[in-house]
Image 1 (cartoon, rainbow, N blue to C red):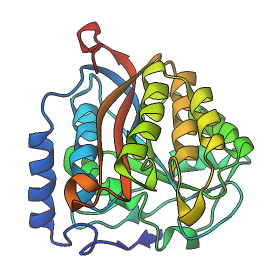
Image 2 (image 1 turned 60 degrees about the vertical axis):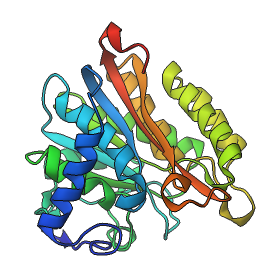
Image 3 (image 1 turned 180 degrees about the horizontal axis):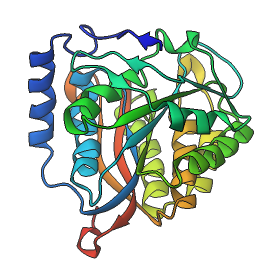
Length: 286
C-alpha cells in the first residue's frame, strides 16, 4: 500500500502538528457561522495556507456542520506539473500529513477506476499540491473520513463530462463528499480578477455547470499563464456530479484574493469557497 509523503509540509503550511492544528483552528474560528443544510460538494482553494486558509476554512466548516456525516471524500485537483489524458487516481494506501495519514478508501477508488476516464499513475501525485492542501482541513475537521485522491491532467470538455459521470457513479450509495480543489483567476490586477471571479460566483449561485464550462473555455489560458480557474475542470466535473447526486443548489461561502494578504494588487490569485447541496431557506443570501 503506497504512502505518498507530504510534498509541501513545512513550506506551504506548518510541518509540525501542533502549529498546523493551531493555524487551522484559528481560520475555522474566524469563519463565522456555517451555512445550514445538506452538502454534497465543495469548492476549496489550494494556495499556501497563509494566503487561502481563511477561505478554505469556510468550505470545510460548512461540511463539518452539515446534516449527516461522511465516510469518504473524493478530492479532485488539477495537475500543475504533468500533462496527461484522463484522471490519475491514487488507488490505496495513504497521503501522509503532519496531522496523521489520510487513508485512501480503496473500494471507492476502485469504483472510480472502473470508468475509462480514470487510471492509476502515481508519478503526477508526487510534487502536486492541489490535493495535499485540502488535508489540513480534512484531517482537523473530518478526521475519520477516508479519501480518494484524483488528479485531472488535460482539462478538456470530454474528460470533464466523463469525470462527472464517474464521480457520481462512484459516490452513489456512499456517504460521500466531493471536493474540487481550485483557485480562481491568476495574476490579473485585483479589479479585473474581481470581475472574472464574479462570473464564476454567478455560475455557482445558479448551480449552472454548463455556464461555468462555457466561461472556462472562453478563458482557457492567457499570456503569462493567466487563467480563469486553474482547477476549472475539476470544479465543473464536481458541480455536474453533485447535480447528478441530487444537489439542486449552489452557495458562495467566501471569496478573497491573494492581494488581501500580500498587499500586491497588481497580480492576484482569486480564492473561492462554495458548497452544493440542499440549504435552509434562511441561507438564501449566501
